[in-house]
Length: 177
Image (cartoon, rainbow, N blue to C red; front, top):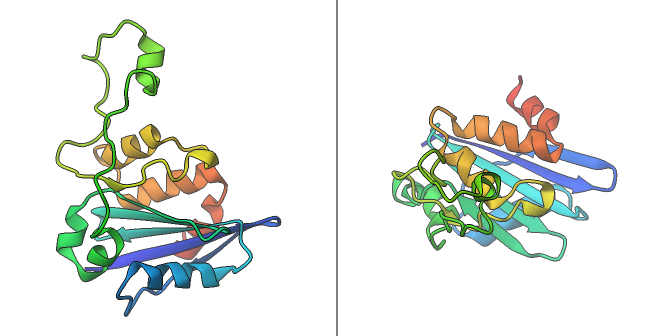
């Protein structure tokens, strides 16, 4: 299974990006160590792993050493060894938000759910911390919505997320676009 792994690190001067080689990793701590080595003094480091135009994994490592991971679909763990390392031990992500948290509920106010987009693709099984980008401007609901959007590839989701958090140009440069 092929993959693209883009690591970005935020320091006071801005974002730094690099493609990360995940060959030979056997546990999540190995991946976290490689991510932390990108910019050891970074306030926040993120890793976007896109696999076979089907799966997206986002890893976040903060300067405190706190590691958080989100996967767009638990099936990735069954499809590849790398998927098993990245998302194999994650619990299902909440895919339905209560009415108080739901942006659609705040907009409509009438309780009619017929026209609302579902929080997640019924065929996908998102896992991990869907709220890991909330302080960067991407709510759990928005992340789940992007991952479930029909027709969006993991690379499209990564591009949109990176554009929102301010490192879109750096990641696109890694792709050679």
